[in-house]
Amino acid sequence: MGSIGRLASAGLPVSDIGMQSDHNRLVNDAAKSALSPIGCFRMGRSRTWISDQRYWVIQIEFQPSGWAKGSYLNIGAAWLWYARKGLPFNVGYRVGDFVAFENVEQFAPLIAQMAMRAAQEVLAIKTKFKTFEDVLDYFVHHTAHDGWPVYHAAVAMGLAGEITASKELFHRLEAWRSNGADWEQKLKSDSLALAELLEEPAEFRRAVLRIIGECRALNGLPRDPLCLESIGSSIVAH
Image (cartoon, rainbow, N blue to C red):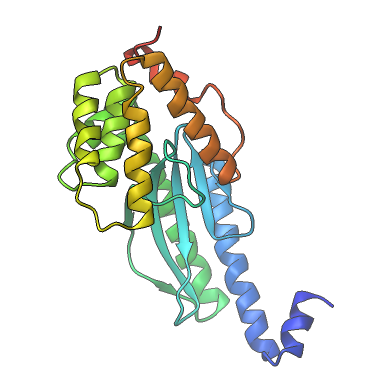
């Protein structure tokens, strides 16, 4: 039995089934048309698309609503030097308003416009973080809050060979008075393990590379063992 048959047998009216099918198809078609040409790909059968930047990714989420058919648009960047399944927005924002689905004729041009806006935002983020120095500068200036911002800045500083500054940030995490949540304790212990490698920059880099590889694997991204080569000569290597 096909998906429509299964849903109909569950009691969903055929008209609603058709609307749902049209709605999702239009979202996916618009996203493919706008995002595939700039190198983005869809994550499985989800409404999330990825632009793979090797040691980080740009995520494009056509987020559904629990109250109405349609889509929000969320754009964000996630750095992969912390291994976890699921990629949080380390830098993220919502673009525009919710676009509601009423019918195919009404929704098609609106979701196409949303997808084109998504492509523009992806290109803007690529420009904002064009070089590793851009990434480093961003994180160094966003350490007002403890936790993840400090971790990202510490890793970036370590990769740049700024050992003293990186140590200070990792020590700040060690002294962080967190709420005791499991993820907070793991972040602190993982940070301590990385901090201990800072005096051996090549070992630090290899450790970060292993973390990135694990994160990529956990999230279905292909292996990229040379992903840090794009950082260039700012790395201190031995």
